[in-house]
Length: 97
Ligand code: SF4
Image (cartoon, rainbow, N blue to C red; front, side, top):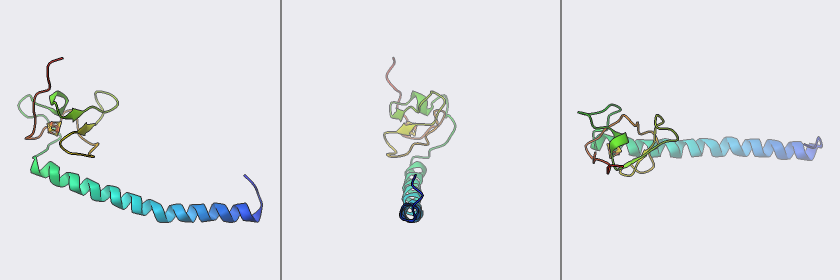
């Protein structure tokens, strides 16, 4: 990094710009999560299994990085916090492997 006043000014400008942009990004993410909450509520999503059925065995589940990580759901678009042990009323058995 340069120590000239111009580069410091540029750096401060970038930091100030980030401080303005980041809250907008976080607000957008929060708004999307609320939308997902509405879908979750409509589907009666819960973070625990129901009568032996759970997301990891549902054809709509999109697994996370590991089998224990939270993943996504094709029915609840954009939601990355679906528990493999979760369940909702849209559960459909995944095809046998
Ligand atoms: Fe889980 Fe319901 Fe999505 Fe199936 S449809 S993965 S049960 S949230």
